[in-house]
Length: 309
Image 1 (cartoon, rainbow, N blue to C red):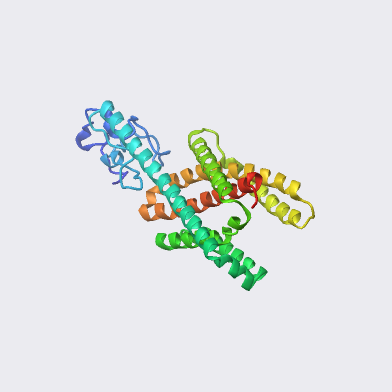
Image 2 (image 1 turned 30 degrees about the vertical axis):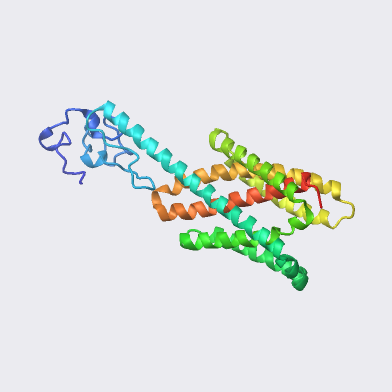
């Protein structure tokens, strides 16, 4: 396609299309994509058929904008259909992320039950002591950091395996709660957390309020929360203060749940054109973030309302 040797009308023999809306897929006569470096041009000079081809594709190779040679009615119908295809692909991608999160939670629960009933965690702590606890923490943090930093360069299968390993290690670590809390209390806290998480997710995905602008606030709040918990844990008689910290933590992770839900939607919209492999990677990293939100809310609910055994 050239710009300098076009006939004056834009088509051979100055033949204009019967319907000027064929000039662009967007239906704007004489519209351009920017200021022409060649100065003013007659209307339709650059209206080559190439401009009317689909310009963008979603993650499933379907066109987002369709060419409508039969007029406005056909164009509107095809555009609406393409928009619905985009929304369907977006919903499918978000469901994939939440599905991966659910699998991670199931792995965590199963490993925690096995570790508790078999006494594996107790024997591990007895044999390794504080070093074993710190080793588990370091490995889990390392996995999460590496997965977040290298998600774009590793394969989707590798990312999924790392996430499942992380979930299993988390389950092994959390098996201690069965020694501290009654089983009924754990079940109630889990049910409350699941309902709370679902409501927050639906609210985040349907509201027009932008939670993404609060990202820096949540990060600062998380750092302050971690430092506060460490300091208070060394203070005698700090049960009341710890309950306050748990309440603050619950509110903080409720906000982060809404933030991560909207971030999941944003990431899929950004990377959906890069193919199914990228969608799988994004679903894993989003699942990790949502998984951490769920686990932390569950633990704070358990500490606030749980009856210790």
